[in-house]
Length: 535
Image (cartoon, rainbow, N blue to C red; front, top):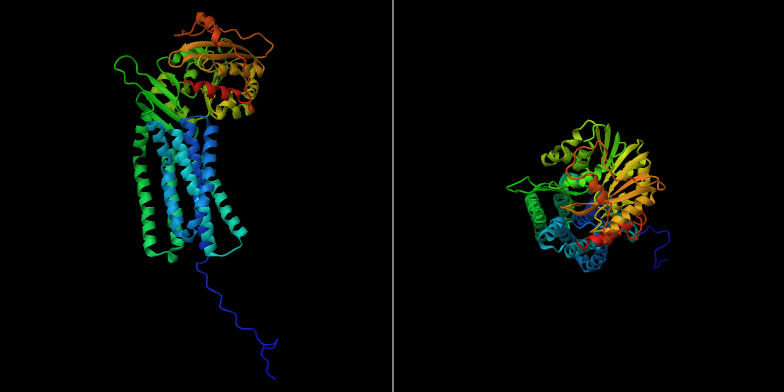
């Protein structure tokens, strides 16, 4: 009996042969590795831009907010703009990474030049952040297309794989920037190295993976582009030191005799070349003047000697990595031990070995009574066990969030734990003339932390009018007397008559109604930024 259909027991038709994979096993892992490297490079660009802004402009919170906000916005625009490129994802991605490697690698140099020569740093920073973010955002759709071309999978799984590689890469990039790139290469050269890695990983690797699916002329052109980017970045790398020196010199009146960028700050020392008289050596941290050798003795005598008018066998110096305050402390023979705590080891190394500084500080760090510690003062105080007769607090002005915490009620509470009952503390507090709210906020903060205080001011020609706060533990007691010790060394500027006058503030610079500064409400940072903008 015939039938038009096969019986149920008939053997099934032969299944079609499974197609061979278009890419060898492991190719997908190689592409995810490229994603990992490109993500690390992208985060380094972001960190480099925020760090540079903090060094050059200050206001690290604002710099970070602007860079991140602009880049994230641009990433969204870039993702949308990349949609038409998905049909030629391989070539588009390789070209994209070449451009990103070139722009990202040169970004620090471009912004430094914009700051030094063109004085258009903020517009340039926004423009560079936008371009870098645009290119980073365009990576995602193209990478997704290439991943699916290698092996089809559920969209959720593909996204999970890609973003896992992306986020882990960002973690590694974020750690490599402060721990490897800055110490080994510095900001400018570090960005150039990352740009080269970006171009090779994004251009070369992707072209290798898809070499059989890309026309020869396209491969040759794109690989030539990678070589051109590497040549450009390499040339700038060779010239980087000369470019940086030339650009940096535009920012300073006198010739630069030392410059370095550390993980914490930009250190510059200048020295005048006057034909008569002593040369003027100046130290700048992140562009802010720290001292001039012409009149620094006025500042450091006023800072140190009133605090050492009482007991002084053990002294703590917080900040003051240039060792000039330390020099004044060591002029007392009855000082038995001094601990200096400064964040940046490069600064204390410079103060210990650099001729123009050792000439000024009298090789103070080589004195056997001195113990130098490189640590964050806030963290160090939390674990400190010793107690001190006198404390000299010599930090830069609180114009960043990191410095503002060192002028907070919480910081002075921690400081009280290392004080003896009759200790004396002195704090450099900025200018009562140029920044009166900042100055009186620091004085109010010290009082809020439970100290009795005496405010005083002197004139330092390089700075102008400058103020200090002398304090002793116990807010209920009398304010500490502003005086010199009976056995004080012979000083060039300070005497008891100068100190008596130093407590008198003119009518327009007397105490103001200002807030004390805390970690949660850094009022001094707000005052400092607003007031110094006018000068």
